[in-house]
Image (cartoon, rainbow, N blue to C red):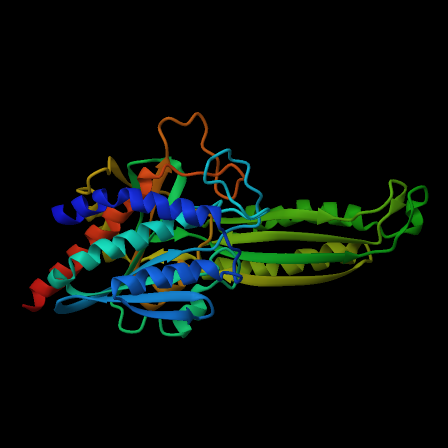
Amino acid sequence: MERLYELLKNHYDEMVEIRRHLHQHPELSFKEVTTPAYIADYHKHLGHEVRTEVGGRGVVATLRGGQPGKTVALRADFDALAIHEENDVEYKSKVDGVMHACGHDGHTATLLVLAKVLNMMKEELQGNIVFIHQHAEEVAPGGAIDMINDGCLDGVDVIFGTHLWATSPVGQISCREGALMAAADRFEITVQGKGGHGAEPHLTKDSVVIGAQLVTNLQQIVSRRVDPLQSAVISVGSFEASNPFNVISDSAVLIGTARSFDETVRDLIEQELERVVKGTCLSSDADYTFNFTRGYPPVINHQAEAQYLMDIAKNVPGVDEVITCEPSMGGEDFAYYLQHVQGAFFFTGAKSPTWEKAYPHHHPKFNIDEEAMLIAAKTLGAVTLSYLKQYATINA
């Protein structure tokens, strides 16, 4: 383990260099070309078995240890977001309107250098390691499910992954057994009323007023229909009914998200959303269309693996504290991997102690303290080596 930590420390500068290169050349979900090529080339130079175009644009590399044993998978995503970067840094995005505003450049740099270091130790490895580099995490249906269908988890016994978390302090590892992140679903409502002159509202079916009623009425689903001991969120993120100031719009479009952890609650929300839409529009004699699109399922960590990860992390250099965090209403398609094999997902704090303000994920001024990558690599590496050694000892 000490050798792992020392080698990672010695290659930290390379980790930073890779991260900054990727940060300058971001690619949007399902449009990644140069990034997966860069990743595949890196692994090929290490001598790993490499599969490209896995599930579309994913890359899977396999490191076979010198001794037989279990197979551990480690996953990192590599897509960026349609956001124009506002940071004034030397490695600022060179692609107008696209930036790594969620840390996926850091995830990739972390996993690549960890792969290089583990490769240096391959003769001592008591098992195999699969490095899953996933495309399109940001946009549903995401890249994970297609990569799984294309065999990225074949032969894998356990999987671990992390997310650099810019609003948590560097040195903090946070995880929990069970529900860690929520199901992320989308709904779209079109209210079809009857337009007219703003001076003659009695001759119209005002879609704006109906839409406003919907924004209010939908909130009653969580407060009055969902068990208060369960968690759920319904948020309308977009309300559009564009018209001149003196014209009542004939239609309005509302788009939003629903978040939940329990599948029963998820079903209830979908049913109640349409019921409320139908009732609200019926009361105003307006028509509607309603679409509910299921996004990623909730991230449910397996109990044994989450506790194992947290126990290992307590002894990793650079980790100041390991906490059992509260569940997050954010979504992640790492959820699909956990539906197929045992494993755990965790957050690695990436907020610098020198920052006056930490910008949240998906913000044009989002950034990470790059020291967090080293801590993430040490933690992923430590849990991998410990897991392989543990089962090799059991089977000896």
